[in-house]
Image 1 (cartoon, helix red, strand yellow):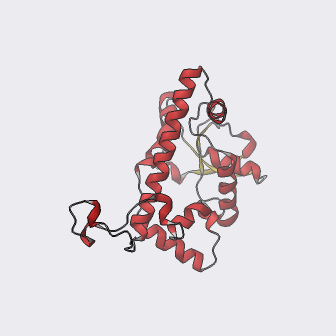
Image 2 (tube, helix red, strand yellow; image 1 turned 180 degrees about the vertical axis):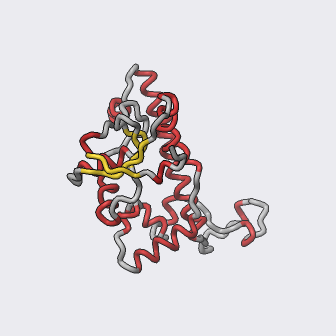
Image 3 (spheres, one colour; image 1 turned 90 degrees about the vertical axis):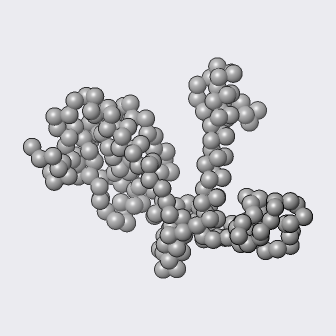
Length: 216
């Protein structure tokens, strides 16, 4: 048996694959549609990882997209001789380890602008139109109430008298996008915190019910 499982790609009927029922990583319909569009554009580039019985360990979003595309067969890699503990751990690791990476926002903005200039469909990259507006610098600075002037531009002691309200604010692709993304993540964090507080105080379990309480 080779340790390089990617060398052993096999084609399996889609209907024979079994989603892991305790997969903690969910795939909303919007994301499944994005994956399906990606497959339409580039074909199938990453095999699904399964065990000997056909249970999916990695690639749930791709098999959901394959069903949407009415595909009959998909490329797979079989992880044989893994213990049940290894399988359970890998389902988490496959998704969680990817979160350790980060974006170079300056390069991202430059690449997206280049793709847009060539009339490429940015939606196929997974970047939403709202995100693209941030990356391309078309969002209003006032939305974030953030001064983009660097500290080196104004040697100030921080007092209000040192700030020129009429001075134009500066921004770079990298600094602007990074701040916008941080703000978005902070808003998500605050929302999740509030939802958890409501679920505890009202004795409910789902985010949907907590949102109804907030709306009421």
